[in-house]
Image 1 (cartoon, one colour):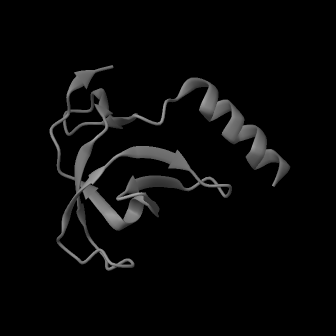
Image 2 (cartoon, rainbow, N blue to C red):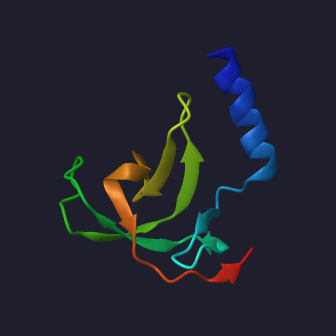
Length: 90
């Protein structure tokens, strides 16, 4: 867990919670700014499959899982697919 803490500190030093770096379909590295839209692909808490929701922030858990903050709660990224347009080239 000590290694995870160090990794999280490094990530937080270079990454901001209001954007996400992604590789688009053409292989380009792009920055997607919050809020961005995602589609729920599995039921989690009160979110239902196929709901469209806004990601308000991006975090990382203590076990290094990427989290999307949706309606004040953090959920693992793998419960969603990004559907928003990519805004900026990196």
